[in-house]
Amino acid sequence: MSRTGLSPCVIVHYHEISLKRGNRPLFLRRLQENLARAVSDLGPVRVVQLPGRIVLDLEGTPEPQGVWERLDRVCGIANTALAVRTGSALDRIKAAVDHVIDRQTFTSFRITARRAFKTFPLTSTDLNRELGAHVLARRPDARVDLHHAGLNVHVEVLPHEAFVYPDRRPGPGGLPVGSGGTVAALISGGIDSPVASWRMIKRGCRVLFVHFHSVPYLPDTSVRKVRQLVSRLTQWQYVSRLYLVPFGEIQREVVLAVSPMARVVVYRRLMVRIAEALARQSGAQALVTGESLGQVASQTLHNLARIDEVALLPVLRPLIGMDKIEITDEARRLDTLEISNEADADCCTLFVPAHPGTRLSQEEVADMESRLDISALVRAGVEAATMETFDFPLGAGTHPARPAPRRRVAPPPVS
Ligand code: ATP
Ligand code: MG
Image (cartoon, rainbow, N blue to C red; front, side, top):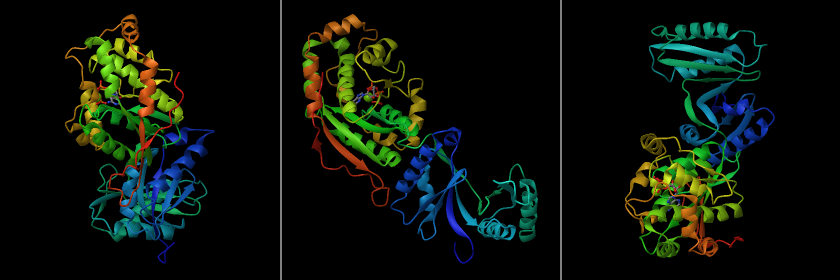
C-alpha cells in the first residue's frame, strides 16, 4: 500500500465460475493464469485471489488504464473496475471515496456499498447512508439520485480491505480459456469461421486453426487473411496454432471424378477428414465450423449430414442458428470483419458450379467418392500441412502477433 494508504488495483468479478462447485478452484486458477498472461507486457502486476473476486495489484504499474482495458478480452470475466484499495476501517473507506470523487465531475451520485462479511459494524444500507452523507458534505452542489445517478460510487468491504471505484466495464463473460479442452476450427478467411472460433474460445476452449488454400492455383490472399484473423483471435487465447493445408491438387483430383453439383460437399468431407487427422495429433476433441443452417447450398440439413458422416469427432457449429446480420455484427465487435471483408478467392470457389446440389443423398456422395482414393488424398493433405504458431502479447499488444517460421508437420497415422 502507498503512503496515502490507497493503492491502485483492478478488481475482477466473475459470474459463471461462481456457479461451479467442485471444480471452481481449477477454473479460478486458469483465470488467474490468463489474467497474468494478458497483461504480462504492461509492467509488474500481481494477481491475488480474494473471496469472490480477483484483484490485480497495480502498485508500480505505469499504465493502470491499459491493464484495465486489456481485460476486455479475458474470457470468464463478468465485469472489472479500476479501483482504489484501502483498509476496511470506516475512515479509510471515506478517504478512498474522497480520492475517487475528487477525480470526477458529477451533479448527481449514489453509493452502492456491499459488505462481504457480516461482522462489519455497519450494514450495507447504513454504509450507503453514511458515505452518501460524507459525499454530500464534501460536494454540497451534488444530489443523491438512486435511479439515474451521474456517478455511481461502488464500495466493496472485505474483512481486511475495502475497494472503491466509480465505473465497471463489462467483461466478455464465458469461461477461462484452457478450461474447456482443445478444438480444431476450420477457418476460411470468410466472416463466419472466425466468429465461430471465437465463440468456442469464449466457452473456455483453446482453438487451433486449420486452413485449406489453393496456392499456387489461386493467389495466397486467403492465407494472408487467415494469418491476420488468427493474430486477432490470439489476443483472446494468447497462443494459437495454424495448420495450412495445400488443397489445390486434391481439388484437381476431385474435379476429374466428381460431378459439379456434388463437389462442394466432397471438398468439405475431405477437409473434415484432414482436419480431424490434424486435430487428433494435437489432442483436439472436436471440430468447429462456421456453418449456419441454410446459408448456402452446402449448409442445408441434408448436406450437413453428409459432412458429419465422415467425422468421428463431434463437429460443433456455434453459428448454426444465427443470421448473417447477427454474425456480421459479432465480427465487427471482434475486429475481424474488416479483414474478412477483404476480397479474396476462397479455395471452394475453385472449380465449383453456380448451383451446387442442396439435397445430396448418402448413396450419391458415396458413389462419387468411390471414384477417388480418399485415404491417399487425406494422407497427402496431412503430410503437406505446415504449422505456424502465434503468441500474445507481443510488445505493445496492438501489433499483430508475427507467425513463427513455417515447419512441416510430422505425418500422423491415417487409416
Ligand atoms: P466463412 O465466412 O466462415 O468462410 P461461408 O459463409 O463462406 O463461411 P462456406 O464457404 O460454405 O461458408 O464454408 C462453411 C465452413 O466451412 C466455414 O465456416 C469453415 O468452417 C469451413 N471452410 C470453408 N472453406 C474453408 C477453407 N478454405 N479452409 C478451412 N475451412 C473452410
Ligand atoms: Mg467461406
